[in-house]
Image 1 (cartoon, rainbow, N blue to C red):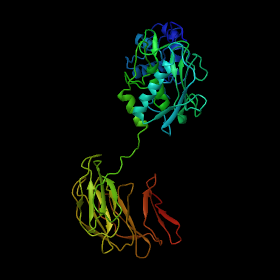
Image 2: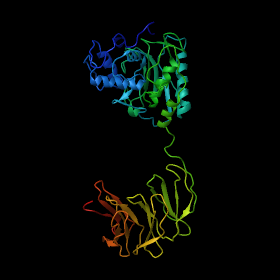
Image 3: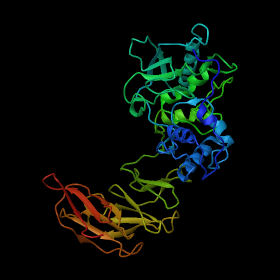
Image 4: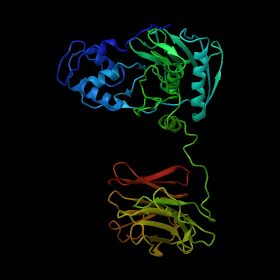
Length: 451
């Protein structure tokens, strides 16, 4: 049971204000606070608001929405002497919204010790209510078990000098993050939700000089689920809370945080874009960010669709004509014009290109040749497009633009005897490289000796 009266962080509370560049005896308490909660990279003992300490104070002030003076001023002292959660606000000096998540959605919890500050077992009911609030928005099921049944989460009231994470001085409670990113118990279970039962009084609902159990439990369970502290005023996951108050409803910031961490799927689910196609699909992105895709229809023609705006709806099908006998290859010229290639009924390479970025199409043009594979296309580091295909002799043949967005070179053989389509890409230094299956079924490749 807690003492009747308590001042949070008393060594900070008794300090005078200290401007940037000034010294004050006892300022180490402020520097220790900043270090403990992630604002200072180490625990400094300079007794001075030096450049590093001032920068840390500024981060603290910005995170908590008070004037960012970089000095230890009255606003900062008032905020620093509020009781708060024991978890850090910043990680490696940077605000973090989430850490990691659980790999399962059914967790067990148990209670071991309660507090004498409230009647009966009301504190346990308040924690159960907090579990229910998170379950309703996060897609979790929390099942209560006995302490000896290996719970995932163990809830209890502890002395302030809790050996797993000290709460001495002004810490209301602490928890831990999920097993993959824990800082208190690392990967081991159970994960703790520990309330300070030495220095703080507990209540059910708002009560003078006491802290509402459900309010603090709701916050600590956010950490259990993987949420960091929020800089949004009024959020449950904000780090500090006052006595004689309640905050038992999750805000939109809290809900967004947990739902982003536990999105049911990163994918939308299937949506049909219609059509009847007889080839693989080729896709590329226009210079203005709109995606476009191409496929062969049942009439042998090239059909395509495009987004009506970036990340927006689709245009519906449009035919670009022709009769093709291969899959389609597409790429974007250095000036942003999309271009595609396919084998025609005469086994030559045919292509079309946009007449301007995101504009109409040129109509068909033959680049000749007699090819026996699909076409692979890429763009050189200097912007010149280049394509590859297997010839009637089994060798790799290619053509390239003579200048970016310019005419074509004519055919050149790169030799070999291949038995597959060709794949092409650029190395990090800009050298083009291609791959194909040989007659021995091994992978064979060639690369440019210079970009």
